Length: 563
Image 1 (cartoon, one colour):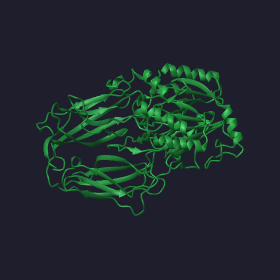
Image 2 (cartoon, rainbow, N blue to C red; image 1 turned 90 degrees about the vertical axis):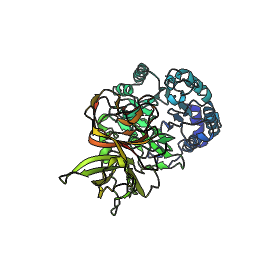
Image 3 (tube, rainbow, N blue to C red; image 1 turned 45 degrees about the vertical axis):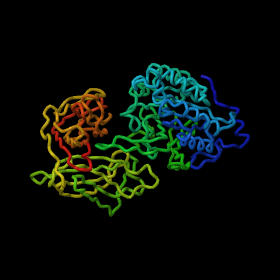
């Protein structure tokens, strides 16, 4: 490898007293100690066709310029589709932010799936991979990127490897092994779009198994990745075990996999700056809207070289020091019935730090002997990612969850990022009879509903035919037990058209481990053609699903009964 760091630029900046390595709040190192270099890292910018769609990238570049970075990384999904206008706008903004080429930081561009999507107009979605090489070459031209799509180089003594999303395992293995042999004792910086599986948040679901298997053999690897979309306001996006992963969240929207819940997308404005020393990395998180540093007194401090025994960001060490959120001392849980069968729970948001990462609501029903049996549970995200949080959390359960007149016990708990709960709020409640009674089309045990699942399956259970007219508003309530390892992705559950495969409901997610029997409810329209199927998709390497009861209702609620 050849050192391509711009030494003339460094010398010029040092002489001129410009912005590189100027004092920056939160930089925890001695005044006379300088990093080898400083990186600005963003990912999943998903720009559109217009210059306006690049506004978050423009804000990030302005931040990087003020802080003084030597290297700027975009870790993939640069545009939302293959948008030539968007790439041209990015090039303009980069050049305007750094008008003097002599002062322009080195650039790393990672090319990912969205950058090849619709490169060939009208081509099927599944052809994206086939056209990726041609698409990436054109994206590189539009960005005026100097480096090849897949490349290796040395930057101020540190080996840097850049992969596109469709590089093969053998390419990763060869380039990493070569870098280790050529640079004994050095960390190997790997820039790839997809993180290794089972590392940072959402990577069980959206990670790469082959990268995990390769990196597990090479503790020198420091992986900088994107793809999983998340908020940088917790430490779920840094991970260590046998190597190190640092994920930069996204500059678009993020979600997640809350149990038995449809996740609502949330906007994100987070980027990283990284001070690279010979013996450590200091990773700073920023909000590009204001330039605010997130937890400026606690940057992620990654010791080099990697040592598993003292790695600071293992899941076990992060969990041990994670504070637990609590509801206010005077908090109460309340419930409102709307007369149509929907119950809405309300309780205060956790306003003080640490905020709730998730809120878990569990519901039990009273049994004939006066005891309590689990009915369902649901998780929703807290406002931990917001500067100013909402004052109240509301969680709704539709009529399919309950029987009129039954006694239920409601419980809400705030969870930290590692699932550790705070004190619970509880309330006992009798379910009222709705004004309109739904017609029961089906209610029976489902003895055929147990089956094992292999790696990353999609399994369907055909629902019995219904005589409901096309367009009818239906409610499907299923009592389901899922059994999964803790180190895997959950199942997606939903209803699809048996003929076309069209999704009739948004997916919800199972818990990990043994869920016990819990109720899922899906509301959808009876399709004009074809029956319906219950879908279990994107599960673990192994697992089991048991469906014990299926209940199908025709909804008479006038608010939803439009054809």
